[in-house]
Image 1 (cartoon, rainbow, N blue to C red):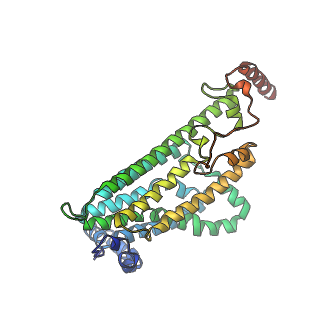
Image 2: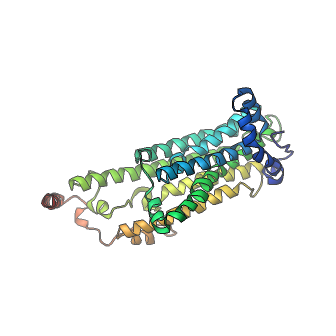
Length: 367
């Protein structure tokens, strides 16, 4: 039987009864898959006969060697980055499809898939417009890590973390969807257990708000970098910006006046809220799917630490910004960041033409 028999909502979140009995399927899955790959009917049956969580994990394991080979051949370690925004939605879609095929109620699964698709659309679009899918593009941080640890350690790091752990991480953050799938087996339209209730609406709305926050933060940052790019090319301050803001090199207004990384904060919030949704739906204080959410938080702590280390080296006022604005959440007693080197005469645009001409002259002399 592909799905466990659950007799209560808390049982849906019990690892020993809903996951452990199916781990043996993971070892047998590759052989069974390859023996069925040429037979559509056999593949369909394999899909239904395999626990959906095991299928998702097997797929994540199968991707790891592909990431490894492609990254080593191209010496580009952003292979997982390119599908980061896509894989979680593939897993959530898998759980929803399985529910439909198995005749399980799907209200929660469909809702998660809608949210996940919105999340993918927003993150993929932002990655695309920043050039992430351009040939040869790579996250600049990987080159820095490689220079620091050397090629041998970098290869081992690629084998263990970049290719394997990150692939498993992307399936782990969707494991609450599996728990929600199990709750749907108990759902009755006329009975004590509902397929959808007010708490589901709250969770759905919270995740939707977090995705919207991420979109706003992405757009604010994009607008800033466009303005900074124009300013650096022409020495003219674009409308709506002050010279000091662009000279500073990083965004400090809008959502970035309250959080140094509002998009990262909302990003983490999406998957933490999905985990909490699984807790609420199963009436448990916590469950095993917290592993994915916690691992996601740890990854963002590490990557943000490296990003900020590099930003502090690049921008002279970044250390001051860090003291005044929280990394993810606003600091208690928060006030807008103040930079003592801000030149107030540019606040209303006065003297801008003089400095435009001076900078243009300097650039001309350097040609």
